[in-house]
Image 1 (cartoon, rainbow, N blue to C red):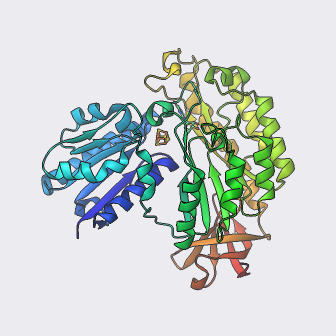
Image 2 (spheres, helix red, strand yellow):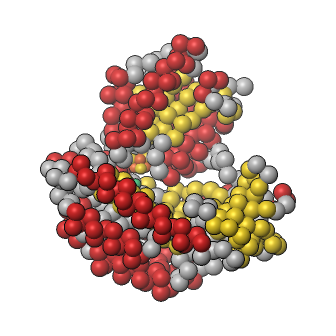
Image 3 (cartoon, rainbow, N blue to C red):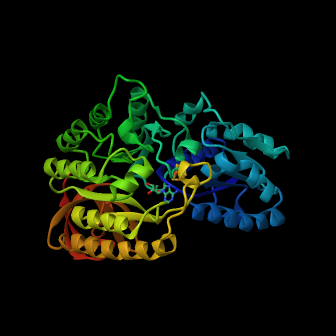
Length: 438
Ligand code: 5AD
Ligand code: SF4
């Protein structure tokens, strides 16, 4: 049997695309390889959100060059956001690559593969969005995790955040038809999935392009599918997160008490330069509403440090918000200019060198907050979806998205159990399964 190996960089959308590509390859008779050395097809699904992932991809490609020497019949393909943005450049730098394709024509993988197997370069990078891109949705996903699954609900992004490459690499917003989403959720549940994770660059904009359905209505529709035990969604935009959605989150029992709500910066001046469409006060108001309707909600956010023009005083506004909100987790990055974005033409902040230090200070502040939050779980009993077994322990997540290592019986895999938390670590919890709840 022929084997494939897929390496994935980047966000949940890329992870889901890779799972779909694995589904396509499975339907073509391929099975997964243990590592790239034994693969007949290697796919590198790339990210371009910052410069670092760009560089990581290029160095990974250098590694894969070896496989061409050892196994000249192996097909190497590059896809995803960097391929969409700079596919031809990649081909020039790494001429041993056989296939390059963009983010909206992944469903052409079978034809591209056939072309590459004939010894031709199979390249398909189109600027406009492939009108048949939803063909991809018809393939089943191949997932590592049996009990949780991503479901794409919207592709692309219409926001014009000045630092962001995503509108270039993934195009404008396109919501999926609600019937198609529900059908996919039904298949997944039949396949044993308990937790549905709705994804998109901006899920809270769901339905805006149709005009007749809202994101909160989608939440109710997913919750109505028999067998859906948990619902999560990523990523919401603070501007589109309305009270109706927050009310639905509070009202629907399956929607987990967790939300990732990127703030990016605390200073109004910087938020405006980023074109985020809200002020610090407006953002905090949404957080207040979330905490009002869902008192035990866990929150996480994305932050950029060192945006053009950001001063130490601006940065301190971000620190203030982080301390005030008390996020469970933050994902903080040093600003990285991206080609073709409006911010790439802005002068780097005079303090750009210092931003590295600001970033590590911010991460240290957050570490203490997160640890304090984890400590508050000690002695509590919480619901855990047991997702896998590792080194003799059960591993799962709380509704608030905390990783838990559990003592318990193997037969609890895939069920939601009550667990008593016995110990809090910095990045995870430990506990004992008490009894099955569902
Ligand atoms: N520089 C640094 N971080 C960025 N992000 C997006 N673009 C950039 C950039 N040019 C971060 C944002 C986003 C996350 C996925 O990556 O915080 O929410
Ligand atoms: Fe990376 Fe953005 Fe593409 Fe996701 S959408 S893979 S974060 S560039």
